[in-house]
Length: 282
Image (tube, rainbow, N blue to C red):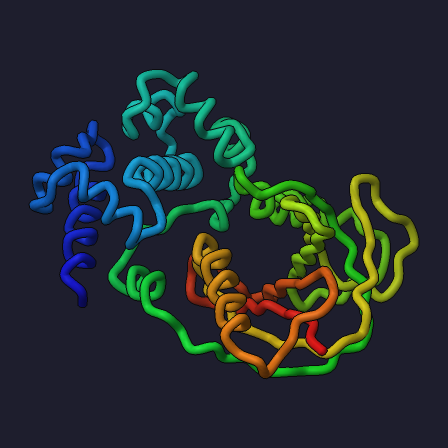
């Protein structure tokens, strides 16, 4: 394990042991044995999170779990994770999860695709070691996906939230669903923004529910790549896949779309199920 990994993991240990206390970045750096200036930069380069982002996400993850699994009132949870008022906690929580703490507790379901797991040595290795480009090629006939869509840059976790919104509305689909998992169809037309349709495969539809759309995915040859269960690592992995494509000449991507497929056993930020990226190729 590289020495810098040890420093970052030691910093994470300090954060996790003090997650319910005020955390000063200088105290973390001192614990690790680096200057504040350099440790902030080392942490970001190795973990892909700033220290501030990591602490915020871990506190919000722990708070969300407490809302589902304990009877603590919301104010006590706010104070437990170092928010100075219920209003401040509610504002940050809603911005992150798309729901107020009260509505999240009423929902009673873990939105684990928005959780931030504790970073481990295995995570750091995954983020920092170059992986060999591995894929398989298949032919797939045309099919249809019905779902809900978002257009933008996914700057505030809009796509993971869209998955949760679609799943809670899937019962409204009046048609024959082929439910072996969820699709995320990404379309980009010469813009910095992209359109994402999150949904399921369908063989026929009787009535299109309000707020949903349906798209035909043309039959094509695809290169299929494995994706990790850790949700925050998926964009990183996709970037690495494209970086690998640039360096090889065996497969040539075509068209203006890709899609991700998450099988019905996929466990966000867990270990079960599988996820794949499908890139149409010549």
